[in-house]
Length: 468
Image 1 (cartoon, rainbow, N blue to C red):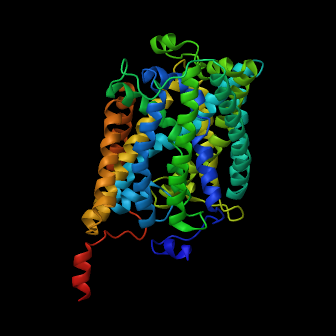
Image 2 (image 1 turned 90 degrees about the horizontal axis):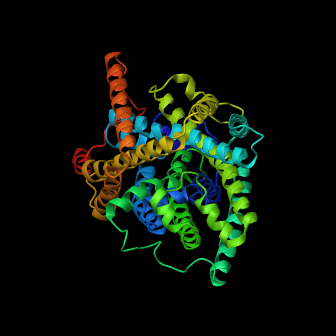
Image 3 (image 1 turned 45 degrees about the horizontal axis):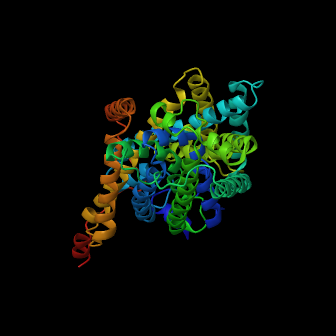
């Protein structure tokens, strides 16, 4: 049944359909990391004027619209490649190429950032082991697991997810008990503080907080490996976004009430990245701070990086089989049913990027800003694609699904992008400009972007008249 979905577009079913709904949910949660806010809590807290929970609330609301648009497009085009395929087939192949190019900024950089954050944290915990050694170890382990097959990846990520949820449950229980016992101060300021509230401040913080949400969209990359087809993908994306949002809001609210250095954090930020662990120490002592720090490092370095590598390799595979990237990246292992060359290249690039950024004092900040900008721009393109494909081309009259929802999602994300880090805006636009030059060179070489089985959709009314 689902093989036929691909054959309509001239593709063969090369990847293995083994993922069930629960596997997709586990994949998405691991990609988002239920304890992800622990690592960037201080940055979001300082950037939002202490309204860290509000930043995550707005992030959930903004991305609910994006998840809805993903669900519309994955049903229309049930294949790997995400926004690259949606924009290419929903608007035009050149637009799809540029969308794929922009989202590469997100997907290619994400594993490198995750490996770097985890390695720096583990080095701080075990100083005898240098950052580069942790980096190399994380990359090798994940590349080996992902090369074995998607089933092995799913099994490992489920085990890791259970561990993350246990650590989070311990923190929530201890922090709740600490507040009930008089530690910290009960307050709703994490949701709204009239003394510090401005929309631009919150939007800037949301751009950082969105880093924690990146991953629910990665589920769309598994459209050719899901047993239930496109409908399962949409359901899994919505479930993961809501579940992760609740967990993010809960843990950041508790931590905000327990931070020992509220004014310092607002004035100076969190350059050492320890604000959440300081709150954990207030709640339960040094043991809880250590457990949270080590769990965060392992979560980012192993399961989170592992599934990020899967998503990146599937994007490279999808673009390569359309000859918009080197063809060798489209090679699939017959025995393991994985895009082996794309997986190996992702690991190599992540290692090189991580090692380079480890030499820069601002390496983590630079990567975070660039990734967020690339993801936001790709989401904007996604919303436009829904309107063009469904409302304009197919003459849909479902105004709610195909106009209102994507328009609201676009407006929220556009506001966030405008208030994003200036350096990220400049580098992101420079990357887009480079993509335009690459596209122009493809045209000059007679290799204009094309998609297998692509034919612009005719308006529904016109097709009806032709049948008459």
